[in-house]
Image 1 (cartoon, rainbow, N blue to C red):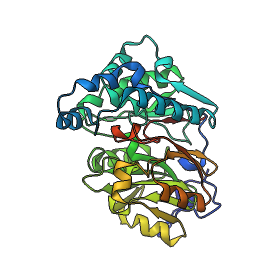
Image 2 (tube, rainbow, N blue to C red):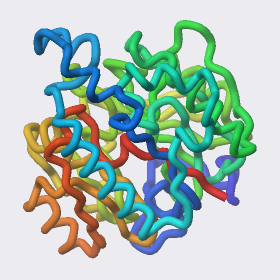
Image 3 (cartoon, rainbow, N blue to C red):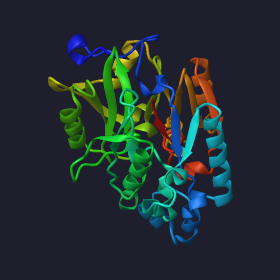
Length: 335
């Protein structure tokens, strides 16, 4: 693989159509970890929440889902993954009987297996444990780490106390052979975390980080921007306030969306409502221009299809009440 020292120049570039890429969208996962919060009992537990403010602030759900419909839609999502990925691991099967799984009985957010464990296509045996800002989610890290250990994986690094990092903010990317992490920061993951990752991982693990400053109402990067192919990004542009590139030479501001458009990448723009309440950007990429998204944004699906993306739509009307999408509900693994 080409290193930063071989390719770095003064102008930012992104892969054009047909470029060889180690980006998340270009690498088919060998397996995906999922979790059923209905079977664990956590969705049912939400029915006792007295008011919407507690539901949002403490449990991070926008509405209380119907458990039966949530389970049905989650099952459909997992079946669709199974039709396109060699292995699907249920979290409860990987670590059956381990004490760290107990927190999932009262934490409906464990359905979002993406956040507490970060994997990178070009480092397939390694992981980074997430560090969650919300108190209800902090125990998820030990649970997902137990799953990673059960699969023979090892930690790439450890975050210091006080730094926060969520998988929904991390998108492995590639720019003309440079191993890049797109990392959103703002509401949960914060800029000092990006600086720590750059210091620890450049140049042996990655070549650069592109930090994406998110609007204050945007929870994670994958709610507002996800590259889905070498030449296609789906985004709510107003979610991105600014961007900065961190590499071995230091840091410098960049215009991320402008950079993408300048090299011919199509930005499929969605509205704030579509991105927040229908999770239009929150797509699970499966390689070879394939993705899974909710079936709730017909216009975005039509434009993705017209751009040559094989769109696999899954019912999401009940799943979306937890404020996450197909990318959030899946942790890809690579071999």
